[in-house]
Length: 214
Image (cartoon, rainbow, N blue to C red):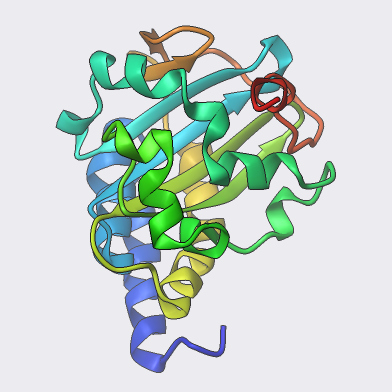
């Protein structure tokens, strides 16, 4: 975290204090995700929940909410397995997800390569994206995905996201999920309840997604 300053750490502390207010999933978008876009400097933020026990199941909650529609999910879902950040995650051995720093598209692709990628050319992806796994319990893991158009995320901005990981995990554990819905990408796009219980062990592999890239 050598790129962060004292001012950065004060901003992270203010963000961490705001996460204590989260007791219901209503605040996940308006507090957790919106706050991250302001802290790091992003156009959108997404909570991804992946359950590997059934194939897998991928459900997202995004901010701003208006950008996340069923039509968007239907277009994005068929290309999800080709995303370079998904590929990076699936390369990791089991149990290492939580020790990994945030990963940026610009770590894996040049700007020209990324703009030529099918998932970017459809308009489903932004110019720069970055993700980090915040919790992993058995076949269930949660990650945060940030995106913006224009410039790449800097080392400092990557470090800011890394510093929020434990605060995000704690807030998401507390948040009541009943009566809330998320946008399911896999196995098929649909709006689904978020109160499906998770399970327990610790893997970072996405077998179905891995097969999809062959």
